[in-house]
Length: 64
Image 1 (cartoon, helix red, strand yellow):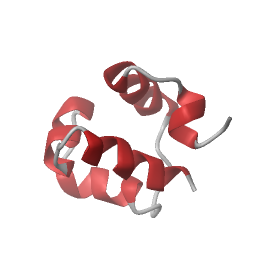
Image 2 (cartoon, helix red, strand yellow):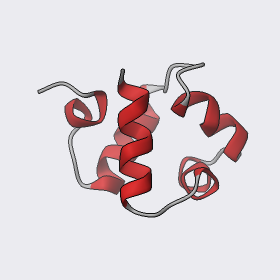
Image 3 (cartoon, helix red, strand yellow):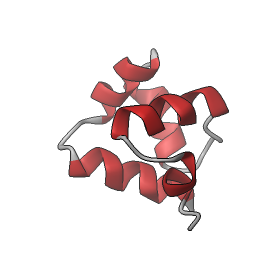
């Protein structure tokens, strides 16, 4: 599932959930729910993360 990719990208940059939460304008607890698959990440946040990580949304979602 795509939420596993979110964690992999974050950890590869040695960032915390709090760091990503700040980038997305939310708390670390809110971001935690997305990364654990408890909530679906809105498209606007997918776009922001794809730009931040320098990748595509397809890669974030695990689509090849």
